[in-house]
Image (cartoon, one colour):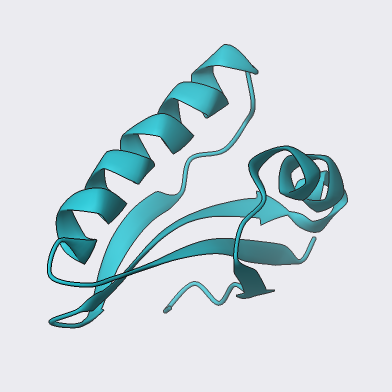
Length: 80
């Protein structure tokens, strides 16, 4: 099954700290909803742009997207 990476963008001098904190909330959501999601993370794209993300199976994307409102998404490739 195809997997999708749901992404939240954070910009500014505190982007990294905010993205790391956001990942904590994503993990809390996964636990509270008893979801079978194991891939979350934070990636620094530049000094002032960091993303937080989680990876979901395509069939789970719409309800999670509607609840968590990511900024964007993309097809997840295991090497990304």
